[in-house]
Length: 452
Ligand code: SAM
Image 1 (cartoon, rainbow, N blue to C red):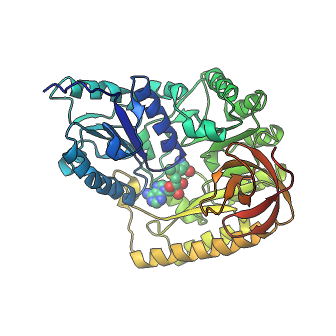
Image 2: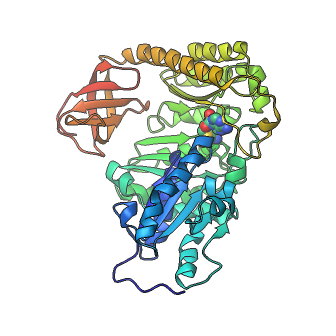
Image 3: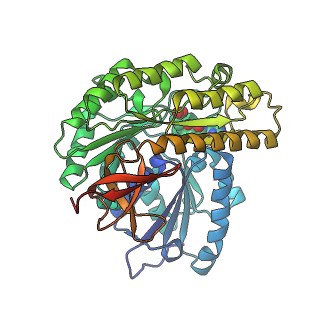
């Protein structure tokens, strides 16, 4: 059955789960819809097309998607013409199964096939009975060209933009679904990336963050790598800050570390370098391609070149077979490296990953205790580390009002420290602040001079 024509432009709403990559995928999705004449809706309840852009890195994320589909069921009940789509990694991983569990979903589209969404919706509108409940999970290599048309409303407001440089992942970490959901690596051409950056700076953007599941595996058809890209980007007029995420320790080369040091101050002195564990035994079982000593050597390489660098990491506790001794090595690594930020997770068994075959005798309660201990340990460490900022002058790029309200603003230093402060300001401003107080997760500053 064909759908009736509407008297207003089609409105879309995208809900996003997961990391920066998913946030940027949603910006690209918005671009593809707006090119077709769609306009953003204020909420899912007001939208003609609702897209859930999902993450499947841990089990809870999948459950959250199904519970959100349930929450949206009455919206579809009230407005039967509403189209509900599941996109992103859960779509790729679950495919047809989503319809069996949630028949109210109309389309399922994987992360490398999102460009096909407007066409799929047009087919549903045209009454094509095969279009509703269609699945598109093809890995399209040209999906990497898509970001050029991303809609970056928030980013332009805050003068920060994500730029995808590489898609997919060629590693085979035994715990990780990413190679299954996002496919093998494809890279953009460096010249095209630089064109996009020039276009962004002409719109006021001053901070760019390069994105990729393994961003430091970037290499274009002329063999130009991330180090070349950092150096070239530092030379683009208007670029004041460059970040990149996520880096794999095994691909943290001397050449890249040299470029991080030489392309300063534009390249920020911050690196997110997921260790995953402090135990070489566990790292081997995870198939990470480095051991504890190898990881520490990368940290040493970075700190010898950039002494003030801030480091962030990810840690998984309760990986199958992780002993008390292995876990103690993870705690010891926190002390040895003194990370500034740690994202920590309990291991979550994921479909079609090889860690599923490993014995996992550790009770769930023990894993939760380990996580709580790691987080308390790191919190105390961060509290100490953040105190050394008191009295220093820092430059922050203002992101917006602080979550705590009270007329406060929040911004980030080049080292990725969050600083809250009071005073006249606005998103996208660079402010100079003196740090007057600190906590485990943020700093408090005062403006040293009025508006900049
Ligand atoms: N590609 C990056 C890498 O391998 O370093 C990170 C990708 S993932 C989006 C972010 C983090 O989620 C990982 O660094 C890891 O700590 C965590 N993670 C991934 N798979 C997981 C699993 N099965 N269970 C628990 N945490 C997981």
